[in-house]
Length: 237
Picture 1 (cartoon, rainbow, N blue to C red):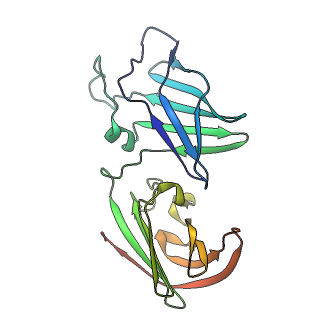
Picture 2: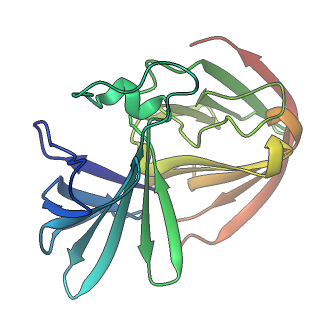
């Protein structure tokens, strides 16, 4: 399940001399295949423990609540201590300076920055057994087998039965890696059918090697399963 968190603009002070303090960081949250929009129910609260700050804010989707949790921590890693002002911008966010999680009942979600400007990008082309193709752009895939990969697909392109469609909405394309990138599942959701298919789930082996493609219809039921005959990885479109 994918989502998007929009923060309010501006700089916010993280107090070193207080253990709890209020803030209002989040503008809205979108999540799910239908891009449901939630808004903050109340201001959020920071809790400080040493140099780690944990921010919690409830987001209302009608009568339902999602709890967003943001953790910010400072580590010197043997270098100089942090200065009096540290600006956590988008580049820092994608560079693992922050992590953001949300809980919906017993389910958990994790968010990172939308931009991939600071991350390595590759395009992976999959050719199905009947010649149809699916290409996905991956941010920060680690080919040396570690836990560095991000579940971001900035762009996906489908070519089914000679018909083409591109998806650039991060709420409609995502990848979930298995342990140490030994496997992965990719979802691309079109909303509107292309050659009779509304989307595809592909099963991947080690280092993004294609195995199986499951194509589904508008009711989200799998109507056809195809083998992936070839996988090619390149640096860009």
